[in-house]
Amino acid sequence: MRTMDGIRGAAGGLLVLAAVGCDRRPAPPLRTSVPTETLRRVASVPVRPSEPDGQTVPATVRARERATLTARVPGSVLALPFREGDAVSAGAVVARIEDRALRAALTAAEADRVAAEADRARWAALVSRGVAAAREVDQANARAAAARAAAEAAREALGYAQLRAPFAGRVAARPANVGDVVMPGTPLVEIDGEGGLEVVATVDEDAVAHLARGAHVAVDVDGQSSPIEGTIRAVAPSGDAVTHRALVRVDLPATTGVRSGMFARLRLAKGPAQEEARLVVPESALVRRGGLAGVFVVSEGRARLRWIAAGEPEDGTVEVRAGLRDGERVVSDPSGLVDGTAVQEG
Image (cartoon, rainbow, N blue to C red):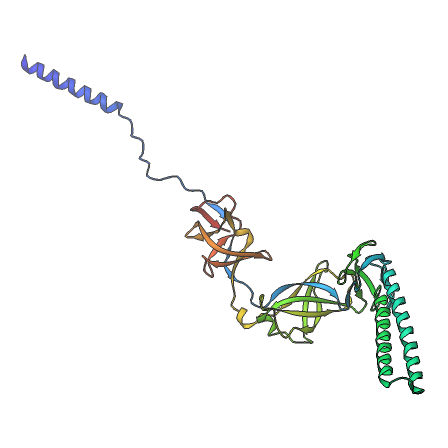
């Protein structure tokens, strides 16, 4: 009996094991990889040195002949017959100042002159008859000479009440108005002559050392599609003690559309002290946050934000004074990037 019970127990165990084995399902595979990081495609440019072949200097177009007529006597302005842009001929009266007091002074001076001349003649006659001393004649001659000088001065002062154009040209400015009470030195009319145009600029000492009279330079004038070739007419022999810059004048040929007062730029060759190239990056590559400036540098497949010392923008580029090396590549359009973004250049 015990033998039969043992056989039945063993058979039951085998059936349980068989059932469990038939019900077993394959285990899910183990995950051995991580999600792939999305790459951002960006355009990059190398940090490069600027071209050391020249520099541009701001300048102003002016007439070669230019006169500012100022009041030389006090009084009220009676007439200003010409307005800005009007043509004037040489010698034309361009301003008149009230002159009644000056005319009265001239009349008085002429009267004194006539009296002094008559007195001198009377004393001369008396001396010739031996009834007067020669000393009296000398004094009469001195008084007559003084009266003549006073009359001449009064006549000249009366002439100052009318201002005449020193040359033919056009009225460039008229800072005074009829009725203004002016004092000597007050500007009344500015005239540009017909002798052509020039460009006037102040240039730093390094560039001045390489400029010579008669040399040709390219001049960019606002509104002109291409540079104009000018000729250096004058270079100041000494510079300003504060700015260390010197005045340069460049003659311009007659060019349609170029007028006095327009903004211009001189293209000058750089001196030896300026020939060291500066590192520059596109202005579009800059990231500005508060007072800081930075760029995204592409390194080992990632965009790394790096703060730099940047100069002023010029012609679409910015000078890099510190923070980058020649040959490093920066993202030209950093919008949407954060430090460490995975990037692909293309």
